[in-house]
Image (cartoon, rainbow, N blue to C red; front, top):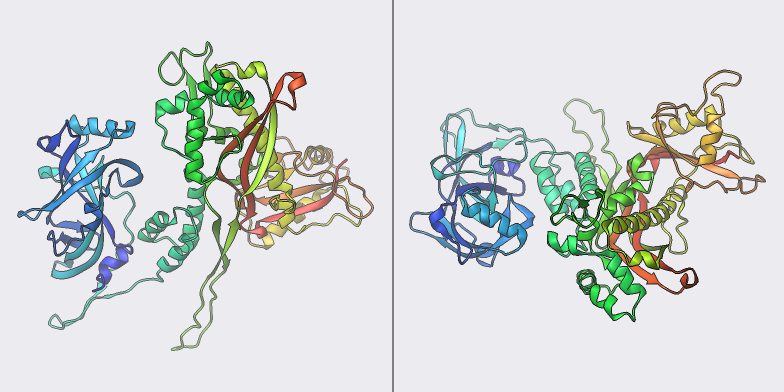
Length: 605
């Protein structure tokens, strides 16, 4: 039987959670197990009515739990601390399980909190397959859930109600608006409630989510909160940019991350015949092999695990973070942050999607629904929105930096930070070059200038940029209904110099590029010499520059897997240097080309 409409509207995916508390008598410290009551028939008031779980073998689908479901923290599938060992439904109609905690650092932390009584609350996540309306009182309906499936058991920090030893996990998202049932006027008339709802976006959201890594979880949350398709698209894109998939994260513990030395790995690569160097880097090579196994690829040199790329090296007064190893304080940002800081595009809002796995498709709305004027008693013509995808596939970029042999023999955190900074800089500049002006040929991505048709024309043989060109760039984006608050300019140093010396109106004060944080007509602007200055227009010769204006949050830079490092000890041997090559899989795409306008025949020299 289908789920009643009053429930289905508020829980489109049928998922919910409720909690009980942990008693110390149920703990076995030696075996690292706990006996938990995870389900009872206590009535629970939800936004759609009163819910009563039927805790019987007939009503509960226990295959997932009996198959060894995970013990989580706060229903986070990435925060696994144990496993469900056994499940039982007792005569008092309470579901109980024996869970065993793992031995990782995170599992030990949670286990100790449980032992000391700090963490006492347990929540079960479950899916409703069927429920029966059993009563109605004071306008509130009571449903008995007669077919439901426990999915996982979690240790939760904040229950909504911890009285009488019972707690329920607090909602992490606001409830969607309550839709009241329209009941028949005559009280004796038997009739199912009629639910009046707006257009259900669940199907559209689910369709889009299928093409997004980790999209199922994002879609569930969006549907439960009643988001529109457009709101889901924006939220999914933000999640992809800020929560990269850990495709090369091998689960290193904190002490292992701190133990890892990039310098040791590079020194071993540069000295393959040096047995001492090979033995010293055994741990780093082991980590590289683990990454390769996870990715299904063999490193050409050594893979840098994502765990290490996310590391913050801090030299304090001692301890595991690196204190006592260097004489001066050092705070070194993670590699991805260093990479972003080496580029100007993230400052303008470009989105970097790191740690990707496999080809990806970024959702976009390709067409809007239509509105119709209709005569009285006539129905409008049905119309729907159409959705497209922006696809990205990995392309390998290689760049290099030279490091002295003597530097590779050092072991301080200062040297680690210096090498990471240098690698991030050269790699970031190479990626930025492709993102702005990649040709799309010879294994390059198609960059921004390749994808955008020039919207503003200077002249037959190019023309010096003037105020009218600036206005035209902004108008082109506005006419396409793509102008937003986060617009900005990207130019090269030559163009900036030209605009600083060009008046808005001839023979009057006030230059096009004014001092300040928003120097170009109230918009922010960034400068990079990755913006070409050798373009040709007519008989101009290779002297034209490009101006780019638009919403840079629509520019996507995807990075797959992890960094592959190779050491070449021969090219710079006469100078006593080792050439370190960095290989990274990258692609670039633009979600909405309408969000940009360009001028590619600016004479700025």
